[in-house]
Image (cartoon, rainbow, N blue to C red; front, side, top):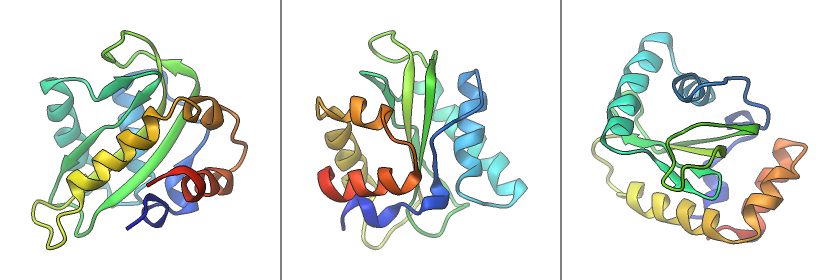
Length: 150
């Protein structure tokens, strides 16, 4: 499965409003369009994951991810914060691009780790941070995935 197939225009937000890490996580979760209780559970799960170690992988990119019962299939969202936000990334630089990955605890197809790897591979392409910064519409993000993502 290609990364492009896991995103919809509704799961892409190019102007995140939040100014802090916790609020960014909440804003990303909203892109999945879950009910309020599920959002709260997912937020707590992501916070617990972040407390183990930041998912900020450097070069302005973070990949918050977890497994949770609030989803019954693998779900992804992308958000961009053009001004950047402190996210405790491994390079201590601000993060501009966020790829949220949420999977159910048990998946028949077990795509979670594979998708995490594909997002990391896509994000590490030296051209990608610049290309992401130039996007003006969610459809351009989807096209970039189609063109460049594994």
